[in-house]
Image (cartoon, rainbow, N blue to C red; front, side, top):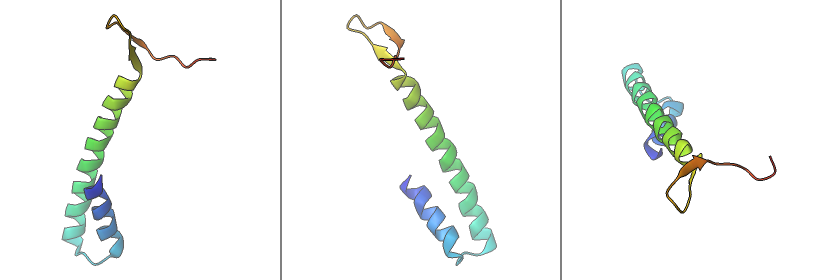
Length: 64
């Protein structure tokens, strides 16, 4: 995430050449995909609750 923030700052500064900007943009896209994959995996883990008997069941919010 920190590297992605650095890339955004560098692109916003406008000091990079077109080629450098394209390279940074491509790297940013790759990092974004990686972050999305990790976030999705974390969300899937959090969507399940493991009971005391190690049985997984969907997470339920009380009051719904």
